[in-house]
Length: 200
Image 1 (tube, helix red, strand yellow):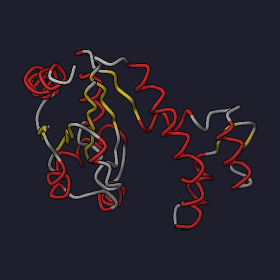
Image 2 (cartoon, rainbow, N blue to C red):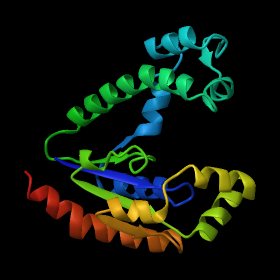
Image 3 (tube, rainbow, N blue to C red):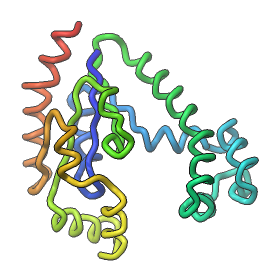
């Protein structure tokens, strides 16, 4: 099994790369999706969050906006939330990896690999990169974010220099999705498949 960490800044195209890798045969483990799953209605995670943050569970579901207000500017509150959710996320991640099989190429789609210093957990770290101007244009188009919102999100994330320092492979995503697919297919064929074959 080859374990690949996939990351990139907001608007870089990381999710598109993950989708292409899944189409090529990778088992993609999406950290954001798991983080949502562990606090879904009826889960022990949601019950624990509700006990820690009264008022954030409404009609049996998490009010994400209310939770964001509760933890955004309060490091202690954020630490409390992470103490609840992170063990659940890690346990579900381990379960999905184990289910993938020993010959799988498992791609961990994790936005904050660099910020959380998680690079050493993976056999290969792949970073998707694009210039700030390209990312801003994508985010305005796809998410309707203002320049101020984009700038705030980018400022909270690692810099390209910090990402390059961690990356084993850098995928530049400045052009079309067709261009990106060519680069990802090359990475799969020339790097990931041979690396996994050497581990089986």
